[in-house]
Length: 177
Length: 227
Image (tube, rainbow over all chains, first blue to last red; front, side, top):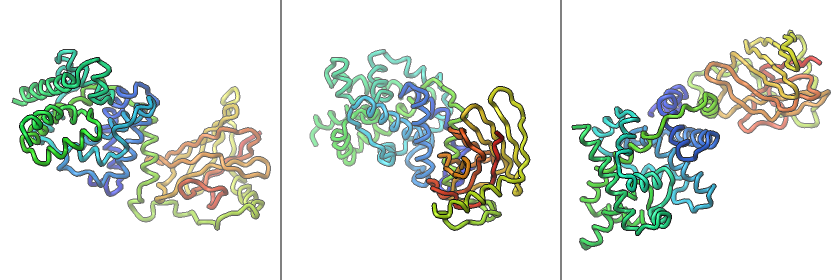
């Protein structure tokens, strides 16, 4: 990232090769169309290039920061298309602020996780918990919208989100042990 | 802060990490977090669970063109890393105005003259024209129906803020082909000319980002189009 902040295009090429596929896959998972996923990925990477100097290692891993930006842009596109009021704008820096650094040991471990293992953690959740998590993270719905959509009390939605994330986190902790 | 309110905020940590709080709710939680170490600790503990979610997505390979497009934007924005790697032969012409359009035509005609032209006989409507150029830039123009694709090689990195712009000549008129592009890292570059009807020649100049109405520099390459 320091080289990218110095506008080293070669370093950025390596950066794209390392994270581009994961970014595109995430964008495609959210927007559901290849052309739109390409646009989202391109916008995200160009914005990262132009603001590369803003990245602060203390705030988290480069990968989670990158994928957070891709997710925000993809969700924003979804909301624009469906005329839903965006909760998040294009303020990637604000998103960054909301994702301060976690446990670096855990982040190293997460990098080693294979996609299948992670899918396993999500897939192992009861359907009612994975559903609210997926609607929020990949669908961009607020907890209130999810409650209305599923005809559930708001407190139930909050509880399922919390239980679901706690189980995923617990499973990660077991794998680290 | 009473215990009940603390529990209510604590219940929202997962939704906060998932981006599922409305802006007002998120702001209230952030105010609570500023003064609640217990919630901050739980938030830090839970965060890796959310960070695994994008990794859980089934991998879909992005098209190679996406990488090319992204790097084209990046290269166009990058500062030259070394002195002298730009198009050193290039000498800026003064901005050309419509009043001196005829001079542009003459210049363009001279640039095209003398290039070896070869009809590769690609079959059907496809025509390939090869052209050499003194600084080493080579070009291949492939025409298929009304569309043309100009492929350049050995193009040096551009100075920051400059792009390549394609132009076409129809009779005595020089028109922008509405194609701005930048060279890839390997020195190749591609421009698509949408309307080749009546085009006698295609050329490429370096222009300020955003393009120009008229060519403002010597062409790095010019290709005559056979009738």
